[in-house]
Image 1: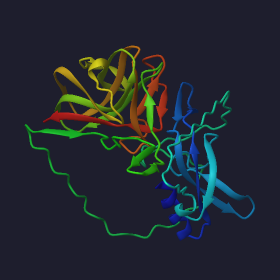
Image 2: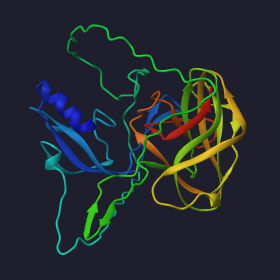
Image 3: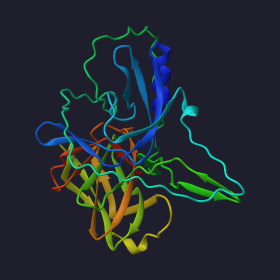
Image 4: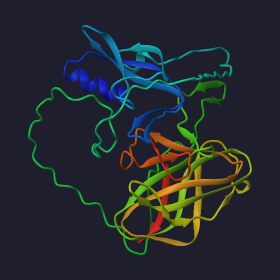
Length: 331
C-alpha cells in the first residue's frame, strides 16, 4: 500500500504522519500541460487510503502518495484517520446472519477551477510525480555497484507473452459463504472506453517480433456492435497513422459473465514489428458498452504511454494509469 510505505519512510526520519481512510470519486479532472495537452487525473470510485503530515504551524495536511503526491483533490472524501490501517478498517457483526446491503455514492461537479501547471518533465522515475521544487535533500550513502541481472532471451520460434498483465479477474463487493456475508472493500478501476473518447495504450519492442494477437482485460455490459483495435507505430510520442487493424470482435460472441477477462483481438496475418514504440488503439462500432481495466499510477512503461482523444487524432490527454493488456508474439 502506497500510504503505509510513505508513512513508514516519513516516520523513519522523524516526520509525524498518519493514515487516512475514505472514498475516491471517479470523476476525472485535467491539469494543463502546454496549450493543447492535459494530464488527466482519474481514479476508480471506492475505498482509498492516503496520508496526513503534521506541520507545527499548519497542523495536519493531506497528501496522496498514489496520485497527486503534493495534495488531495476534491475527489477525495475523508471518512476516518488513525496511526495504522487497523484504526481505519470497518467491521460489523450480525446474528443469526448478516443481511445483504449495498450503498451508492453519487457526486456531480459542475465546474473545476484548476490553478496548477507543471513546468518540467522527465522520463525518470518511470511514473510521473507532481512535486514542488526541492529546497533540501538528504545525502545518499555510497553503495557498491550491483551487477545487473540479464533477462533470459526468448528462444526464437517460440510463442511468448508480455504486457501489463496482472489484474483481479473478479471485482465483487459482497460475497456470501454459507450463513456468513462479507463485504469486500475493493474498488473497480476501469474506464468506460466505448463512449465519446478514444483510448490508447503504448508498449515498446526491443527486437523484431511477429504479433499474433493482442488481449485486453475488459467487461461487457451490453449493447450491440463490434470492438476492434488498431496496432500503430508511434509518431512524436502519440499514436501514428501507420499500422494494422485487427479483425472485429462481435459483441454477441463475448459471453456475459462477472468480473474482467481477456478479450482477444487477432489479425488476418501476424503483424511484424521492428524495435520501437507502438500503440494499441481501441475502437468500436454500434452502441457497445464495455469497460477496460486499468492500474492506477502508471506502473508500466513510460509516464505518457496512456492517452485519450475526443477528436480521433490529436491525443491531447495523458492519463494517470496504465490499461491491462497482453501481447502474444513470436521472435
